[in-house]
Length: 368
Image (cartoon, rainbow, N blue to C red; front, top):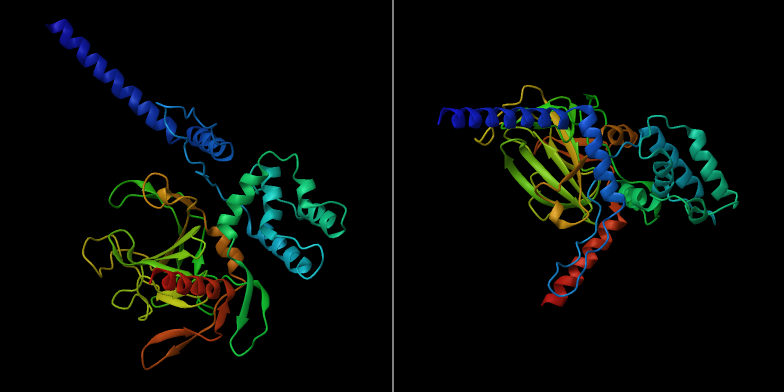
């Protein structure tokens, strides 16, 4: 019996060592890189549909399963300026597709981005030397980057009206999550370690500031969740009207976390005050300040299929460069001393929100 017992113990120890080695490799830069590379390959090149004859499984639904958003704020701004420049011409340029061309060229990594690379593409389109279709005909992964980047940036530039005018404007209609005139500091902290509850990666962007700083809706959408979460404290989740983006604003102010008019299902316009910065969270008990540093946790989840909304298929992206890009458009606010609420100074009508409300009314009439 002793030799058998000895062999069992040795086998268990070997399996344990193998498990530790595998865990270490998966969490090493090389292991993570290999997994990310595989995920990107699966995302840009979906597997061929399986045999669907009788007795076999149905084809797997194809949708993007991985996005590693590494576009710099400089590249975003350069592309946006080309979009504005070409908007009223007979050679319009979609700024997101322009970024997707470079995404395919760079393999998604913009760390060595050059403005000259973008101008070489944009100038050919503006000068009618080539079209986007011609320029991307031989780019194997252009369509992946085009769909992925539109999922990230699709609601940021478009048409809107300012209060008191019927004139339609075109441009950046998304806002920084921090109101104008309120100081904050931040750094690229996406993927850093967190340990409350369990060890995990930080899937958002922290913006440190002052208690009560007005938190702004980055994009127009509808409130999908509002309330307490043991990790995020008082938090708001807002879904874009195209349902591609889920914005997560967390650690809101104790006792006074939200705009009082908000509830689940409410629509918000980009630039609206939705809540106030605080440091709630890390507690099963509601309304507790258990976070040491006052800050807004700002996160963006991409959703290509509803199966990705919750669970292992979630796609969260780095927001640091996005926050830098959006800092050029900060919503100016004013305080109502009677209610202690902050409100935007310049009201805006987002044409995308207008279309969404019309669709909701039409759907409600059809259901009657």
